[in-house]
Length: 194
Image 1: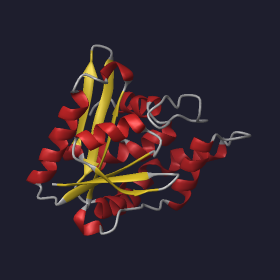
Image 2 (image 1 turned 180 degrees about the horizontal axis):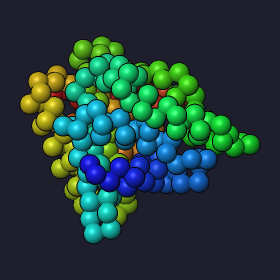
Image 3 (image 1 turned 45 degrees about the vertical axis):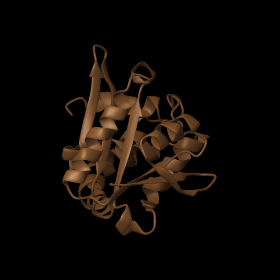
Image 4 (image 1 turned 90 degrees about the horizontal axis):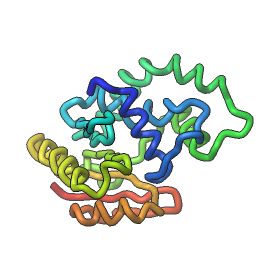
């Protein structure tokens, strides 16, 4: 996980419900500081990068214990990036995009939402692949590696949160044995027993 800027770029280029979010943020680091950096720093045993000749083109990241991870995010990760986030906050665009506004609001409150019952699905994951890496089986293999690592850690179940209109992602996860736990206009939570 040496190319953190490259992973942040993958996050940005898939950050709009699977589509490219470049240009939707006054600072492109917003998404990476939430969805990539803390996993690489705090959960290296559950973090894998996919690279090709052009560099990073995907990743799968997760944690075996979401509640513990949220506490470590607050105590270990947030202090590392708080100064940079403060600078980003001060550079407020005249009209932040909905995506940027959502990240600003989330970092202001840092409220993690977990499925209930949490004990059944304590782990969670994120996977993002650039278009050049999609449709080639890499995603299935990468999620499989992560789920194997979670099983080895004796995790009972895993969840993930996705945009409810991302039908391609839903089909991918359903193929991997996930099922919808809850769904709203803002988010869909999928779960899988391990």
